Image (tube, rainbow, N blue to C red; front, side):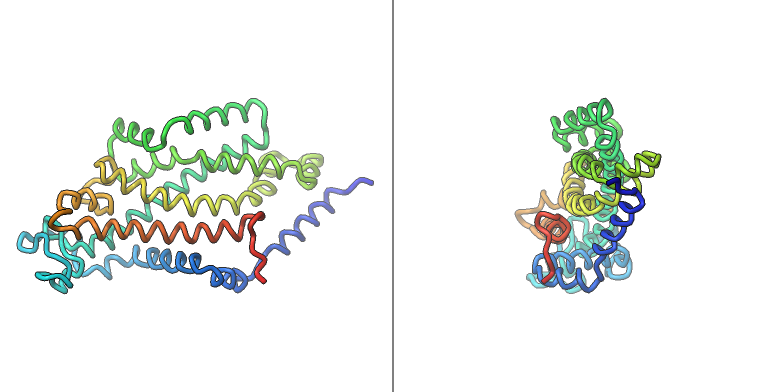
Amino acid sequence: MTVKSEDLQTDKNKQNKEEVRPVTYWLRLLLKSKTGTLGLIIVLIIVCVAPLAGIIAPHDPTQMDATKMLTPPAWLEGGSMEYILGTDNLGRDIFSRILYGTRISLLVGITSVIIAGAIGIALGLLSGYYGGLIDTIIMRIVDAFLAIPGILITLVILSVVGPGLWTLIIVLGITNWVEYTRVVRGEVLSVKEREYVKAAKSIGVSDLKIMMKHLLPNVASSFIVISTLSVASTIIAEASLSFLGMGIQPPTVSWGVMLNIGKDYLAESWWVATFPGLAITFTTLGIIFLGDWLRDILDPRTQMNGK
């Protein structure tokens, strides 16, 4: 007996509706996970601090004061509540600089992931859906990228074109798409064999519409998980490159730039490098915790049942 494509589409739509969960359902799952809840709290704090840095910060992050150079944190001898986390070698308030550095970290992390995700999803859809020569070419390019460390490619490109904020964002975006392509391709290879996709092909639905309407929604959960974890790795990459002098350039405030400055004062003024380092650590841990929770609930193999 032949199954009509309309019936297959109806069954698919019903299945999708059944999978839609209320917000309270996800909140219950989140509260059951201590690490997931902690991750969400950290991420919410970072997301709120970034746009409000200009209001929260007690000082101008670029304002220098020669009389306040290397002032220790408030709880140490010689410290002051005016500079709660102390000052750096130019008398700039570390707390204010960390707050402003949050903006750069989120901007670089999120924007680079959007660029990488857009490239990776597009190539993954093309590779998995069409197969053949297109698949072979794309996967050989993927293999080439995997054969060379990403940080090395990034350093080479930045050495040629020069460091800078938007240069760094674009370079990180175009060098981190490989993981998206591999995952999306694998899922598309499975999804395109389902009955409703075959039915759409048989009635003449265009390839673009099939990819956008039937394939893309099925890879959305994997994209969300990978993107969340990639934001954390991108923030670390930005800090590493800025530490090496190949990323964000002064006077723009960045946690990596602060680490680069503080490395020369670790012995006598440890706070200059320690606090931006802790900011990077807690931010990435929060994002990773949240990403792990998302992976647990969105991955069909480990999905929670919410009971």
